[in-house]
Length: 258
Image (cartoon, rainbow, N blue to C red):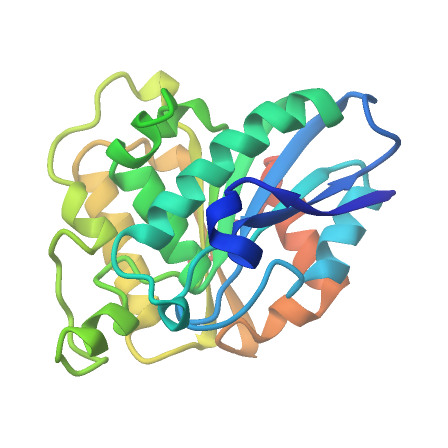
C-alpha cells in the first residue's frame, strides 16, 4: 500500500483544497475500483485524515481510495461552495486516478456531512456537469448517515432550528422530482444509518429511498443497512468493520437490511 498525501485540486483554498491518494501498489499499477471519500463533521470540522485506517485497510485489500478536504463554514464558506469543491475534487481525482492507479470502476461516498455532499452531487447533476461528468458515470454511491433534507448546519445559519425539516434547493431530496429514465444506466446506491443515529436521520433516509423508488429508481439498485448497537457514525472508527461495509458495497455483496 502506498499513501500519497496533500495533493492539490484547488490551490486558492489552501489546506481545504488538498486530497490524499491510497494506492494498493506502486503508481501506474491498474486496480479494479477507486473509492472517492468525503469526510463528515457537520460542514464545520473534520478532515481527509479522519478515517485513514479504514482507507488504508481498503487499499491493502486492493481498492484504491482518495480522500478530500473542502471548505467549511469556519473558513467562511457559504452554500454551495462546499459542494462545488467536492465536484472539482472528483473531477481532479478521476483524471489523476487514471494516471496513478488506472481503475475500472469508480465509487463515490461519504459520512454524515460527507454523505449529504455526496447526495447533492448525485441528485443535482448541475454540479458535476460543470466538468462534463454525469452522476450516472459513477458506478455506485455510498451514503453513510447523510441528511437528504436541508443540512442542519445550513438551517442554523439561516435562522432555523437545526431539527427543522426543510426541502428546498439546499436539500438533495428537492431534486428527486421526476421519473428516472433508462434504468439500465443508473448506478447502485447504498444508504447506511445507525440504530441510535441522530434524531430523524433513519426516517429521512428511508423517505429518500421511498421517494427514489416512487419515481422509478430500480429497487434492485438500492440497498440499505442499519448498523446495530451504534450511535451516529460511531462505526466509522472501527476500521476493519467500516472497511468491510464499504468493500461489500463495492463488490456488490452488501446485505440489504433496512
